[in-house]
Amino acid sequence: MPSLLKTLARSALAALFLFSWLAISAAADVSFERRQLKLVTGQGRTHSFTVELAVDPDQRAQGLMYRRQMAPDHGMLFDFGETRRVMMWMKNTYLPLDMLFAAADGTVRHIHENAVPLSESIIDSREPVVFVLELNAGTVRRLGIKPGDRLSGAGIVPAGGAQ
Image 1 (cartoon, rainbow, N blue to C red):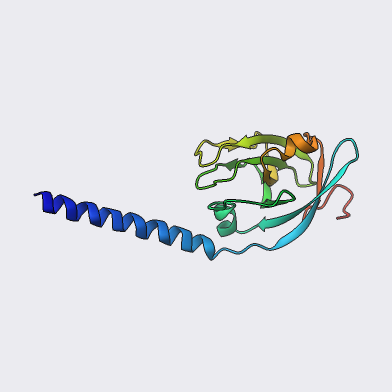
Image 2: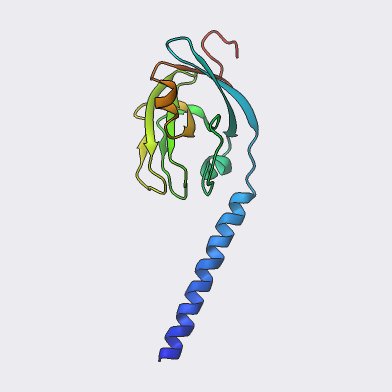
């Protein structure tokens, strides 16, 4: 009987290893286009970021999962292609993040600061939005970002039509 338990434990461990390897390998197959994005605060200050675009279902599902670092002036912009309520989570995401939920014209509607790494708690946009910008945690506080600030570039067309 102890031999059977050892065999079962080894099999379970091997299956877990294989599943983890497959999940990480699949994540490596998803690629993201990079673009420049500007954030203009209510005080008129402009901040530039290089963002990776998550526009298709595979990219949005992958997001920043499994990453261990991100440059301070980088982020990920999720484009949902339609105005709707958005639910995010931090499953398999090791970086603490600030999330900016924005309307179709780039207006920041809601901010969630310091999302907890690896948490499966739902982070709700609270209202219909089109975009979610993920930045390193602390960026919102450091730059004084607030609801009402505006995002432009990277496919976001502000009110008035100019990118």
